[in-house]
Figure (tube, rainbow, N blue to C red):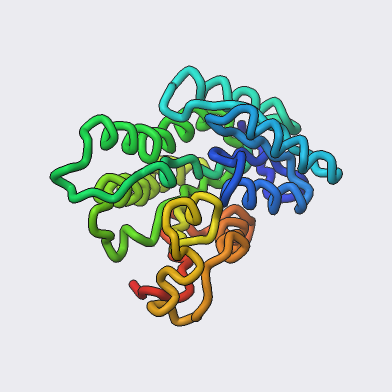
Length: 253
C-alpha cells in the first residue's frame, strides 16, 4: 500500500481485545471514527465486544485469531485490510498471557508454560506484524504493548518479564526495518493496571503498588489510552523505536 492515511477514518487492528486494555483501546479508536477490528483467541468474546460497541453506533468488527499461528494471523490481516477503505493504518499488538500465570521461582517454571508465554507474548506480535506488513498503508503505526515490569524486574515472574522485554527489542528492530516506508513502531509499557485480569491475579489489586507511585492512586485502563492514541497519531510521525512507560511515576528511567 502506498497511500498516506494519517487523516480521516483509519482501519485499526487491536489484538487481545475481547476485554481488558484491548477493548479499552478498541473503543477509544472507534469513538474517534475509525474502523476497528477486534481480534482475540476468544472469538465469541471478540464478536460480543464488537456487537456491544457497534450497538452504540461505532464501526467495529469482531473476529478470532491465534497469534501464535502464521495462517491465523495471515487471515486476520486480510480481513482487517478489507474492513475499511483498503489496507491497515494502525496495529495494536496487545494480546498476551497474563492473568492465568502463577508466580514461581525461575527454577520452578514449567518449561511448557515458558514456551507458551513466549509464543503468545513475543512470537505473537512478530507474526501479526509480519502478516500485516504487506497491507500497511503509508504513515501506518504499530504500537506494541509491553510492561513496566521490564524496567523494575519482578521476582518469580521470569517468563512474563522476559517476554515483555523481548517486545521492546522487537519494537526497535521493526522501527528500523519499517522506517524507510514511513511506518513507525513504538511500545507502551503500562504499570499494574486495574483490569479484570489484574483483579483475578492479585487479591489487593486496588492498592497494589500505589505507595511506589508519584501519583497515589490505582492505574486505570483509561490512563493508558492516551499514550496509545498519541503514538498512533500524526503527532507522533517522528517518534519511533521508543518505549513509553505509563505507570504514574512508580519508576523513572
